[in-house]
Length: 321
Image 1 (cartoon, rainbow, N blue to C red):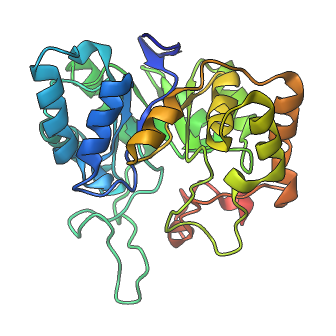
Image 2 (image 1 turned 90 degrees about the horizontal axis):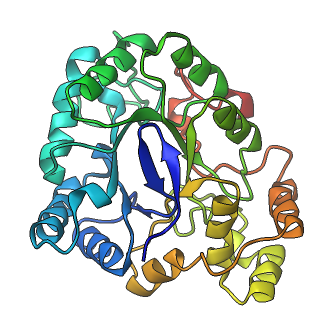
């Protein structure tokens, strides 16, 4: 069975993918194998997740046995914050390609606009546990130019951004020879990001929602954070359509025209998360979900606020502080 896609640059991106953030080594490989076996054709990866080697072994196995063609699977990876300097970009992309056992990526994203000091591990911190920013932080233009060269070299079909705000995206658009094909950000009814979504649509950028279920069980969750999967309105909509709360939250993104990458390592949940094409949300459902954030505050609730980088001039969520 083939599933709906949205346009992402020169490619078509399946609207439901498997997220691999916070999927531990030892279980992520089995999750990816399950996902591909039940019909997923979109896998979201990143260098910082430190599980790309295990995922690559599964890709090698699944593509090698001929059951699934590489060109039928949309695969994303991301450039981590310690590798923004232009001379680091291709080297870092090559590491992901090697780990994932691929010749090319369908999409390569700048993971965050914040640059961290290279050569001190992936999360450099001083003796006071404060993140160390790159002392020679490159401009967005310098990093983006290096990503464009990856497209020219055939290593990436599309390039894009993750966790950038509107002003930062506008800056990239002002000089980009190859326009960003995609923006990936946290999005769910407690943080619908409707203004950002509208901006992307106007600028021909696809939109991918991470943490669409509100990040249940994550180390980033705050103690007082409301659980979207137990929200009364979400449960009412789920009961109305005869589906789970999780399926409602995934379909919410699909019906907004987005792609969505729910993470799971549980086989039954992985399969359930893909079964969102037998129903659609009506106007009333969407109105309810679009306004759910008002229950938790005027700006909604961001689970991945990375406040340990708020001292960076490139911190993307300053308006929320």
